[in-house]
Image (tube, rainbow, N blue to C red; front, side, top):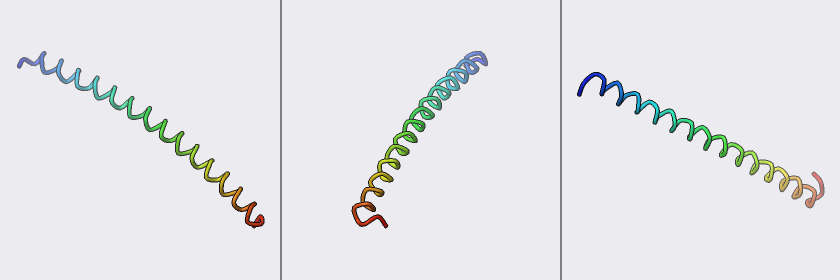
Length: 56
């Protein structure tokens, strides 16, 4: 394998790794949004239960 082929292979690998990292970042952001939405729902349910139990 020549040095040019090695450089090309490394460049290709880095480009693919960069894409994978971008995909993981997007997935993590979506997961974060989902977690925040679930936390909001849990807080609303907690308030409703508190109100039903007498507003403690």
